[in-house]
Image 1 (cartoon, rainbow, N blue to C red):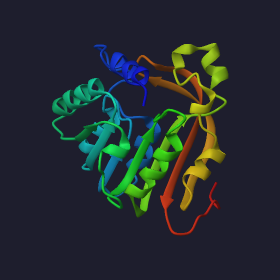
Image 2 (tube, rainbow, N blue to C red):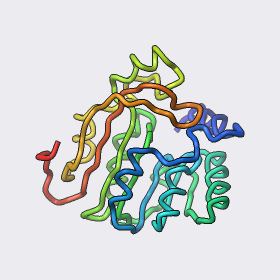
Image 3 (cartoon, one colour):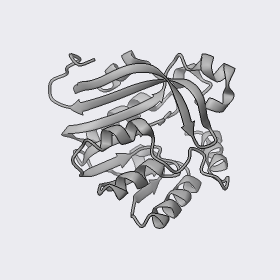
Image 4 (cartoon, rainbow, N blue to C red):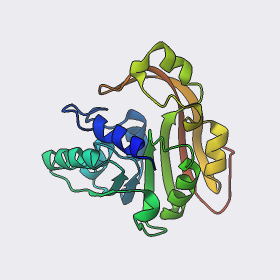
Length: 215
């Protein structure tokens, strides 16, 4: 992963304010609240808003990010909320998470660099137990028109870093699709997600049989 990518996020998370706020993502919250608590993983978790919410709800929480600045703020937030996180800093292949460990994985605006994102999704799938749940929200490939009108909504400027429903189905083979769609939503998340944007939303349950009957 490039030094420029790392520096971008360390700089973003060095600001006093929390870049995307301290409250959990609405879509994530609406789905994690329906699940029985267990072990959950937050890739690219940044400043910890979703991880801290899950810990407050009784989950055993692990998280990772490339940014040590993000981890620092996440741990500060966890301390304020009187919860604990197992939060690692580094690139996923080096972090030695065990396969078949997690009951849920939350990919919330986890826009990994283009050259690694599909590989990361496959690795993450191996960490999820059979029957475990993926909760996913990130910007769609149609988001660029919204970003052009309002840069304050955030999101990658690189088309290949954005997502399509077809890409999600390809990356998460072997899942029962509980929900998959593209929507235009109004984001109000801190300083860097403000305004209308186009997102992909996906909830999938890892199974031996691949089903798309519930799209």
